[in-house]
Structure formats: structure tokens, C-alpha cells
Length: 371
Image (cartoon, rainbow, N blue to C red; front, side, top):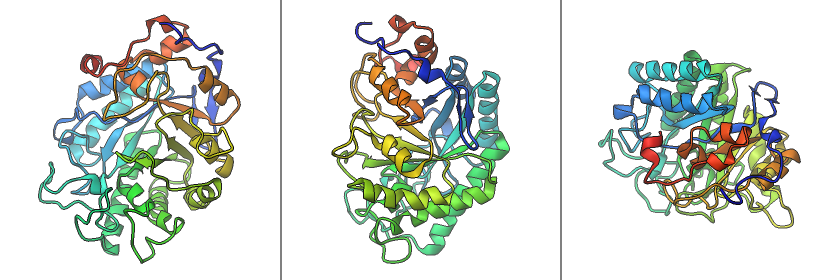
């Protein structure tokens, strides 16, 4: 593998991490990646084996693929895993056991896709998509805005999922507030044009997420970790911005941090890109600087091209030198690895053991056999 071996020591990636209520063996996180391999929403033994393989090969924290909260319009694919119902929750408990037996930690990503769902999508074709203003990511009116009572029902579904995660033995939860899905649709002015308390300026548009976090916190107690994933970009709209400056980012993050978020997962497509002019800090770097909370960086880690489509184009292993420099400088705390870990379950072990010449290319045509 030419040019893929980091010139810097990888030691920083394998140092233990500890914060107020998060303790991990190292800094490597498996990023959440939707796969659609759970028929009728129930993950099988293959899902447990999939996550176990990454844990036994040295991943410090696994964030599951998006798991669907108990709302009829949460999903657009009957093979994406539910996080409700006895059958699905029993299987998730088995996934947790498998990861823990392998020495890893795991949290579910709790997900509602909002108005990225189309009318008639399975598994509930009669359920209309929902969003803060009934507007999709293109600004088109698809359905009526959510009422406050309906908003309360969705918040309660998130809280129930959080409680179920704790009961199943998970090590925390992640709320998916990125990429144009439901929580992010409340964040973004293009999809949130409400005039009540859930709409308005950038700070006011955080209210829905704040209430979700608070409800989850009440459901799980003070010591159960809550991670929030957020992004500037939206699916298919990669130049979108919630915050145009560090000052706006501070306004956006402050109510979320105060509501009880323990860790911010800052989704970018290329971790090395500065978020704002006149600073080399990326989104995770700015978020840590502004909030003082631990952050996770993500975006084309270990690969030579960026994420572009649903799974991205083929890519080869790439140097980790720049990433490790940033980690050693404490720009961020944790590093989420996506496609590289999808293609190669042993990625972390190979990096740790200086077996970089054995790293596998990411090739969408070959992925199915590697799960």
C-alpha cells in the first residue's frame, strides 16, 4: 500500500479516553452506516456478528446504523432496523452482548428520517411523512406542519427509545440530528419556517432538539451518555450551512450543550477541511473550542477520496498523518471511521499493529461479502 502508512505514530489513536461519563479503551469510533440488512426491522445474528467483528479488532466505540424510533413515519425502508417492539429489542440486546463479550462498547443511533421520506414509502405506506413545516429539503410543500401535540408524541418516542437502550445494556445513545433528517429539519431555516416556539431564529430552531435531549435525559438519568450528531451539510445539498461563522455556531451549540449533550459528533465529508475562514479548525475542532465538550470528528478517514453517494465511490487506503497531528493537538477527542471499517473489519487492528500493507480497498462491489 503506497503512501498509506502514516508518517506519525498511531499511538494517539489508541490512548484511552475518559470524560465525565464516557470511558473508552481508545479513540476509534465506528461511524453509523445504514445497511438495510434487518428484514422487517429486526436485526438478526448476522448483525450481531457484523458489529462483534469490529469490536474484537480494536474499535473502542461502535455507533450502530440508524435505528428507527417508534413512529409510523420514521422509516422509508422495511429492512432498516427498528428500535422498538419486542422482537427487535430482544435482538439488539444480543448485539450488545456480542460487542461486550468482544471487549467493545456500543451505542444505538436513534433516527427519524422526517421529510426525506416519500409518500407511500414502506414499511408504513399510509403514514404521511412529517417535518416541522411540511417542507422537504428542496423547500417543496409535501404535507402539513406538525402540530405541537404531534411534536410531543415524537419527543416521547425518542425518550422511550433512550430508555429501551439503557434497559438493553447499551453504553449510551446517539441522536441523529444531521444530514437533513427530522431533527436537522428543525435546525435548518429552509425546512423550518414555523412561527411558534419551535421556529424562528437559529437559537429558536434548536428547541425541538433541546426538548428531545431533555426528555431522553429524564428517561436515562444523569450518568448515561448522550451523543448528538449534527452537520452543516444536508443530503444532496453539500454547501448548506446552519452557522456561517464561529459566533453563529456558538449560538447554535449553547442551548444543545446546556440541555445535556455529553459528546458532539460533528459530521463532515472531509475531516481535513477548515470550517470557517482564517482558522484551520474543522467542525469538531470549533465545537470543542466553543462548548468545552468532547467531540468526534468524521469524514473520509483513512481513504483517498471523499464520501459522495449513498456508500461513496471506490477508494484506497490513505495516510493518517494529518488526522493524528490534529488528534495530538487535541483539536478533537475521538475519530469516527466509516467506509474504511465497512470494507475492512480489521482496520483498527491493522493500524495498531503496523500492518498497513494489509489494509483493504473500499469497493462497493465487494462490500457484501465483507459485512
